[in-house]
Length: 585
Ligand SMILES: Nc1nc2c(ncn2[C@@H]2O[C@H](COP(=O)(O)OP(=O)(O)OP(=O)(O)O)[C@@H](O)[C@H]2O)c(=O)[nH]1
Ligand SMILES: [Mg+2]
Image (cartoon, rainbow, N blue to C red):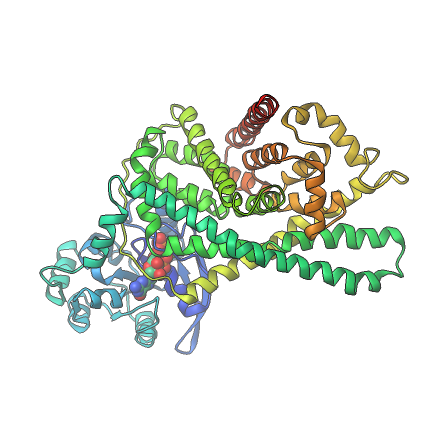
């Protein structure tokens, strides 16, 4: 099968093109450095099947960072049949070196001037035929995001696959070719972008506005997402009482318990949070896609450097709000090993969407609707504060030696298509995690809370009861009771398991679960529990990712042990202080 590989600068639209042509769901966003490994999908070119390969964006073929190595290794070992060189049509002059290097690879090259829509809006004219002739390479205009120009691209790839290796072009030649074929108006008007940036990047107002935007985002997630989640859990309760209970009534008691109180309660409780999580990703996706995330990096850069990190680390922390795993992989764009490790040590403190589920449940149970967004916001602040504290403590061990150059992309509209893709990815992730962890987790918890035989379900005689009894000296000073301790133990596997576990432990789902929690704890214990759940080791996938990214067991051990200790200390201080104040106030 022929191999066609996409190469170009970060943020030039390679992953958008892969998605457009092959229906894949590669991660796309208005932020350089989203793709960090090799992605590929099949595609028909003319009458043959080909493989289209998406690589990380690069500025230079001779670089040494992890993502650049991915590209050079690929080119050196795989010998592609065609390189499609993706250019951002409105920044053609910045890509001469890379094009010259690519032309020297000994492989056929075709040129795609992407973002034709943006170039047009800026008044840039591109004489495609002249450019193609001057470079001696097939060339076409494209808008990967909106789909204009895909037919020409098909033709281009057919031609490209038939042509011989490209002639090596010197940077001067490329520059000359661009000069005669690309006309940029004397003053390309980025007027709108500049106007918006005057406000959003304002030296004083910028940060407060950013915090305001994030607070608004959480408000939105809560006020739209909570009713959706309520509706889902109402639905699941009804399915249970109307359909499943009558259906299973003939089965032995123990099996009924296993299926309904174990599997069904556990998995349905977790599943009822899926709409909320999708919503969260959609909102965060808008922040990322419009280009505001890059601005956030810029705004935070000065502050972050006081803590040993930089603006990029901050964006990775924000991305970690979705899921820590891709954020950890995203650190590959960071060239300095010290900074990369420091960022990786901090990312697991990011309040990921799995933890969000736990908090939404507890906050809804213990706080009023008015208090809820603020409580959640406070947890996000704690999350960032812990990341910064970690960085501050370890910055002399992992020193940053890399100067930060951030590109600020123009503002872009998120499209419906991209949003749907993002939502779908989340559903798919959830299904994957369900089959991998959640089902197993809740089953195991059911066994532990129902055995040995003869012990009353959920009582202190069960295995789970014994385990939490044994751990009580550690968790009592934090105000975390024995049921919650069991949930935390299993939350080590994946945070989704925590609420699934609670559903199984209390033997309820939906509103009944919330009522059971309210009866057992007060808000101080609840917040202490949330602090612990937020800070302690995120999940097995995160640990595995840290291990595979660093290939160091010592570092992996540190990234497990450190959050454990911090979690205990923070919960302890909070619980003891709050209880004291409560008693003496
Ligand atoms: N206006 C416009 N935007 C585009 C076009 N193609 C891609 N984009 C946007 O540009 C941004 C970057 O797109 P990606 O496909 O993630 O770029 P990439 O080249 O894969 O980036 P890296 O993975 O970081 O190297 C996204 O916000 C896209 O929506 C286009 O033709 N026109
Ligand atoms: Mg990409």
